[in-house]
Image (cartoon, rainbow, N blue to C red; front, side, top):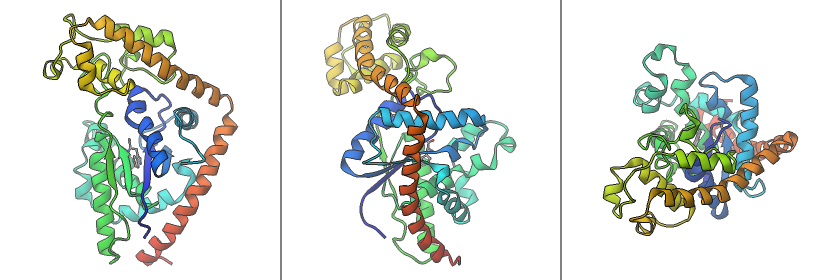
Amino acid sequence: MSKKKLVFSGVQPTGNLHLGNYLGALKNFVSLQKKMECIYCVVDLHAITVFQDPNNLHDNVLETTASFLATGLDPNKSIIFNQSSVSGHAELAWILNCVSRIGWLNRMTQFKDKAGTDKEKASVGLYIYPNLMAADILLYQATHVPVGADQKQHLELSRDIAQKFNKDFNCKNFFPLPEPLISKNISRIMSLRDGTKKMSKSEESDFSRINLKDNADEINKKIKKAKSDSDVIPGELKVLEKKPESLNLITIYSELTNSSLEKTISEMAGKEYSHLKKKLAEVLISEITPVGKEIQKLLEDKSHIKNILKKGSEKANIIAEENLKNIREKVGLI
Ligand code: TRP
């Protein structure tokens, strides 16, 4: 087993990445790439656990990859690829389906949320999705996994599966137990319309989120319309915590200016929200619109993006096959 640090993370190809993905995941991916070996995967096999229109899925994989590149992920530093092009993910997922327990999966809160009231109608894939996620990570013997707080339970399951595999097949320390790198921001970037809900691509109103592809005009309009408060900005976090939409605007501003929340609050205390909104729109426009333009530019040459994915898959596949050889051996497969 290799003892070196290795980062793995996956992003579902939704096509429409937003500020929450940017501040919560992508920016962190870029900074990790400077310090460690990293593998970043567009998880198309996860996406199909709920039905995807095939044409959309194809385009969304390319667009998510373009968003990776536009935010600064470098294919010469990190391995960037799409999950379905390395068949080891599906193979290891099957083996881990046989290690993981039904009782464990029954505790997964995301399945309960996503399947809704009629669980009988959810795909089997949606139910065993966390086993595939464990396979993604363990296939590379990854040690560190940057995820949002909503994925913490899935990561704990990955650790349980790794531990049970190591015990069942009598190979102590074979799979390292992956450590979560929980970004504190991902759960804190909230909808611009309802500060108690996460910013999400599935919320109906586009005014609830800043998309990476929004232009300056759209950003201005959305920030102007964002819910805030008629009072002036309070100087205490405790007071702000009772006004989630206002706190969200301040959080976003502090993240984008790389300043602490406390410092931003004291800078803004006593001012009108219109002042904060004006400054926020400015920093958003200067940071987000170049990313959006770069995504559009990259999407003009799809074969270039496909080529990056292909090269990434080749690199990923070498590591995956090497590990799978050992995994098959442990299980006793010929
Ligand atoms: N389940 C994750 C999400 O929805 C995506 C994901 C799939 C992932 N495989 C992974 C994240 C492996 C980290 C590691 O956000």
